[in-house]
Length: 285
Image (cartoon, rainbow, N blue to C red; front, side):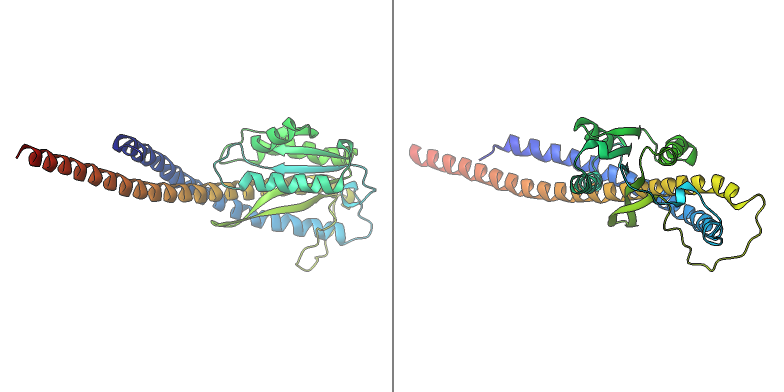
């Protein structure tokens, strides 16, 4: 049985750990509120740009663009969004697992796919295991602006146009609620699913539709990447908040259990001392 000093030491260290996890939970809760608001605020813009793109691309049979056309798939791109740090439950591992399974199922050789990694955890995982990581971005803050990822988003879209890969899938955690985040796979390129729920509106274009699409379609694809990143950041803070709450609860349970063991051990020690005193007194009579 552990000594009273050992049990007391464990109680003290566990209390310090619970204070840290409690603080991290509160910080993540505050960051979640801001991240959720940012993700929600971006939705109206995405809805509107999708409506405009759908009106231009689908409203006329004459409108064409390489980003709208499917082609034989020789190489697939995977844009993987993880976090720069852990302590967030299964947030990072679920994304990595989903991408790894997809690659094992669909590809026989590293020449058949390429990975674009956003986030240090995903980048390190794939790079250390020899996956072909052709572009990466790490060190993004909690409040990421579009300018922060503009270069990577533009490069990802341009590589599709240039034929580096023939399709691009995006993997990220979709924020549903503070306790639910779903691993999401979205086919980013080619843009074969841009139909809007709203009725198509007839527009007169100046300049030509192809010229408008030349500018608008890359912006739309880049906005999809940014929207997924905002969604992922909200999911990360929610996952960390939940993980830290669980850690705090577990620490409190352990403290209660250790305190009970400490009291029992202390009571046993006191009883033993009393027994020895009584026995000694009886021996002197």
